[in-house]
Amino acid sequence: MSNKMNNATKLLAGLAIGTAIGAVVGLLYAPESGEESRKKLRKEADKLRKELDKYANDFSDKAKQTKKDLECKLEEIKNKLADQKDDLLAKATKAKDDAKDKLHEAQDEFQKNVGV
Image (tube, rainbow, N blue to C red; front, side, top):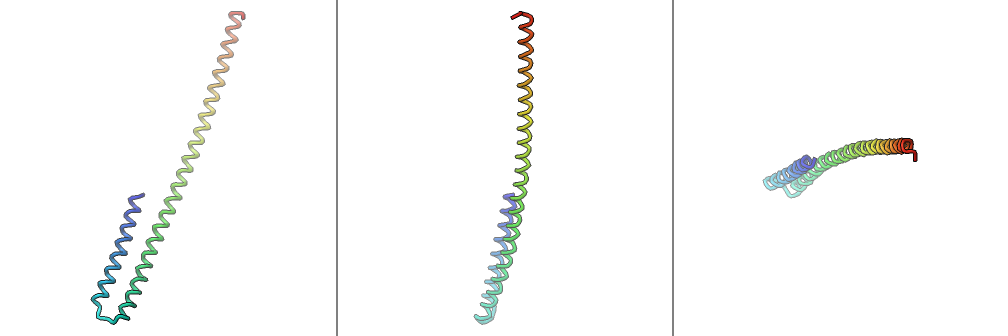
């Protein structure tokens, strides 16, 4: 999961850097006025911002889904452990009761045979 997030971050950074470099190089070599260059620069900046927002939202959605999935898995594990605890307690109680019964039987048998 961390590796996927790291790859997504690298992709996002690469896209942002590539777009920014392309926009700057294009402006430096363009035979246009300052006004036209600023318009193009604004347009490229808006385009880049929209693209970054899209990737950030995708990343955020994936992180939220991963969190939700992990919470579900943890809840399942918690329920299984609670069931196992209850089962073990029931078995321990039964074993204790069986041991008490055997002890009483042995005491009764002893008293019957010895006459105490």
